[in-house]
Length: 520
Image (cartoon, rainbow, N blue to C red; front, top):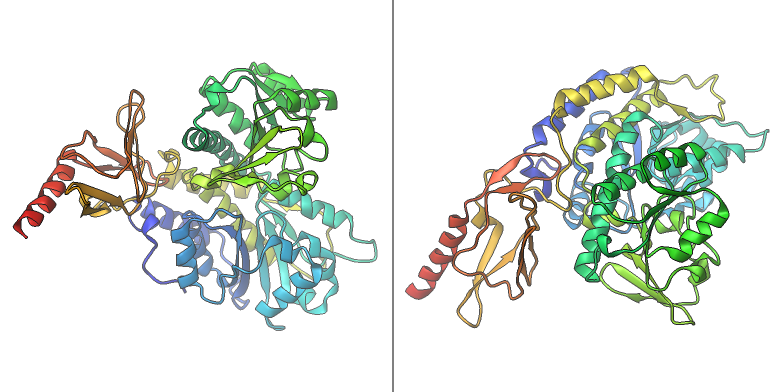
């Protein structure tokens, strides 16, 4: 069991009781067959603050025997917490590339479960799809594995393809459930799309001295659930000249009705690749590949909405070594043309924590409900080669429970981390004296503050910045004056709650420290 003490990013979250009670209601609503021994859980997950309560809920259902981290962007505080809370279970050395080998995948599962135990895989992104045939053929995994629950559209497509590729003489002995196409997932993905736009604009402003509004032509490749959220946020920001490509005519029709320029042919796609200053890739299936890279506009920015190995085919660029900055990889082609991969080609929203509020908990609940169906399913007559989804009744039940706990929930500001509402603001900063006898502050955390329209307070070890809609003041040496105009509210991650901060306390902290210094 994980330690009682939660990581700093969630322990002060005013939303904690809502989330704990939500998952308590979910686990009570969808109990596991008590006649069976505790199931073993192998889970793939993003290393984010939102996974903490999810894991605690899963511990009430079964024994977590393996946690496989997904993606290259990981919350460092949650990463350390997972190492401490799940020693020997949190497997940092296991990757999607490693599991792509069927022999590796089967051997890994057999190392985590005994022959007389039962297990379920909770997947994100189809990590175990390449091994589906071998999982059905190996006598131990066939006997022990109760089923798989997948969380994403990309992963569902991989399992669908794996099922189609099973020879007719090989049966599929365990159910595969997916929450990718339930309405609850649509709610989450829509907010993911919005967070992708926000993250892109933040990265452009902070690292390349640009912004979305300066782009002359914006392209969105793929208008699925995430793509819809991207278009919504681009429209809200009044980003000009947005064009959309998708082969699904229904989706294109909806985008057209909302005033966006649409393309649905290969000719139209190539035109967008050549004309766009920034491209949002939201297809989940190699939006840019092959010779596409050489037809892109010079100095184009690429924002991927998922893992780069799923969204981008970089094989054509393998002979070019990119220049890497903090969150941007710049490829220079022989003709001098530059291609900028934001977040190095990975999902850009994870650079800033992928904060979408409590919406993600509804999808996590649907995974728990799918897990219950997998565990309680009859195995003697199950040989389906179809992916199952939650029925409408179960989905409605989950949403009603979600509304009960999060009726007034709103997404947290991008990148916000939780602060303890009971913690004095001065405790969140470490004062020190620099060589010029001025008071410096080194932040222990990064926070977003809301002041009227939009004020962001950003702390790092070397800077303290205050941004709002009308001005931008940067204290690059982290040196603050005795008084700063920082007003009231700081938002906690995913809560919508507010922490009152009196700017006088900041000045008081400075004065107290200076007084102690002079006494010495």
